[in-house]
Length: 624
Image (cartoon, rainbow, N blue to C red):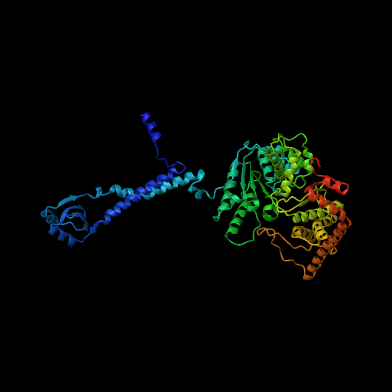
């Protein structure tokens, strides 16, 4: 008997709890059998002709009936020509005698034996199908995929990480020392809550990481999970959004219900601006659904049923300005932690972290690379190392050299060289004078960023480039520096006019940038004769993008004064730049001709050519 049980278990094929497509095929097979049976049954019944009692007596008297089957008042029979018929009668002795006299075969079927199997089958078939379908759906909810997802649409999509399963720690996060200090308070509380509770302190219930993309917000969250050694839930703000009304709020409830079961724990919501945008703006069901999701999130973070200290919410966004004020108040997000662009020390540490597994040449100085990458984010620095490694790999080098980093930086900041773009001799000459104008003014003006290189090799969408880099991290900009920048931007246009008495469309972007700087000086920074007044009423619309502008509140007369102030700044810079180029026209000619010959000139070459005292250089490789 034991052997028989084993064989039966191995051959068992009808498993209603089976995940995957097996249950679906079983359902389709049963449904096909039922439809086929119904079709056969109905096609048979359609061949039976219903007649009345008078016609039945006529058929009996004319001896046309071969046999009949009787069940109470229902009579079914077969004619001698093979046709089927049925009739409803009231049984009587006269009828039976008439049938007996005609020698017709009679079969009497008791009611309890007539079609009980088919009756039972068709009665239970709908229930059977419903049972199989619900069983499959229930199993699909806990599985991955399948039509059962519609039943689990309100379930949270958060990924759960158990303690000690995340290998990222604060050692893997270089820089952002202040942000790490704020986050360490959360970790200390989770590990030793008595240390804080003895003086009555309450741990922050929510921490919001803000900063530009690529500065390490998500990496910091992973490091917190690795350091805290507690359950960790991770979800993106867009995972709450769904086409069905009420789904987002349901997912929020389910997420916090799971978190409370595993408390104390951390819930990380990445890109929270997807659900946390300011309420009351926009129309339509989609907006209402998003607001319902936000309302539920607000209630879960600080509502009547909230338990203090059990669930800590960690969120990240690069758009804190569009978040709802109710979300940012103390009690929900108690701390807003800024994750800024890395400074010099942080860039050095980031480069050291990402270059651990890279074979660097001994002459590579990471500190010098860090000094030459102001404004780079952590992601930019990681990409820089990877691009340099790719450049060295293509050249079949044993190590990554410093000139590989130089090539990689040029490619990232300026775009790849378009060596196949065929420029005519005239275009090349115009480009050379244009870039020489930028370069010469950059060298002659005292408050510009140090010059790095100039090239007339097309890169990206530009035909040439004159490139300068700040000598140190800059956190503010003076009026003199902004005016110098406008003059440098006008250098290309002025050089074209001085040499060719004409101008090209290549100066379009220079003019646009210069105008924007001048307008910013007048309308926002108070750097004009109009005084320290803000005239710019522009506000970024939180939903329609950055270019939607509010209507200015000042008068047309004030707008005219603003335009005149902007024009004055542009004209003054233009006149000064033009005079400077006229005074140094020989240097402009010398530089342009040399650039036509060499196509690319490094800072050291330009300084020697023009006999100008060099300033700080950001070149990593030896300049010729």
